Length: 283
Picture (cartoon, rainbow, N blue to C red):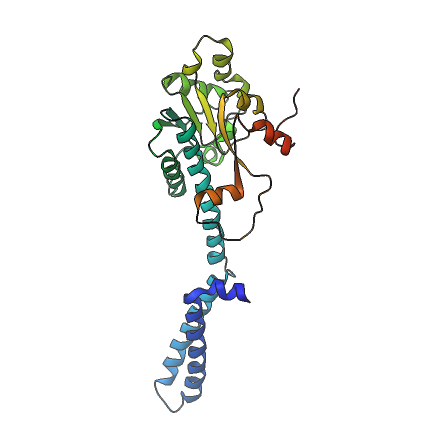
């Protein structure tokens, strides 16, 4: 009951009061319509007002889905923005002065959320690292598979189509960027990425070798890459996180800590020991 009243808010409570008064007025007008000319149209008007108030109440309490759903979505988005901010904040503190190649999903019409996440990331950077370029991996559909229609292509997640070759192309094109930040994880054929050979062959000086930072991607096979420093940081869901409808903390770090963890070269062994299912077993 208390939660329902809380969901109603001031608007919902006013709607309840107006609805009650309108209902009483409608009944009175219905009884007087034979003796008072204006009573009948007044009753109809009050009935419409009752219906409007009923819709408002249902929306406020979440019965129609809109109000309750929007509250949940907004609450979750608060946590998500915190994860992007803290990724930027970590880079600012641990890798200041880096030039970032930012890899993002393809733009979508009416997408209002992605720009807000990018803004949160920039706020975390606080000007201590520079986003040199923002790119989306180019997709080439395999020649041996039927080409989907354009509208079907739009429905296929980019993560399922992007390849190591598309990442390699971007990293070669922007070789002056020493940090690759991917908002969309890494391709499935991750072993084909040239970044591993850049680090292994020793030709490129260590201070010139690109590093990576990841959010929204699989990391279970990246323990060694994280430990070696090739992957500087991964934003991961906290295994102990509890997903409830409790309001997200206003403090960014507090919101982050309730849902996420940062996996870094410094703590990857500790995390792997504490949460033994987070990484693939060593082969």
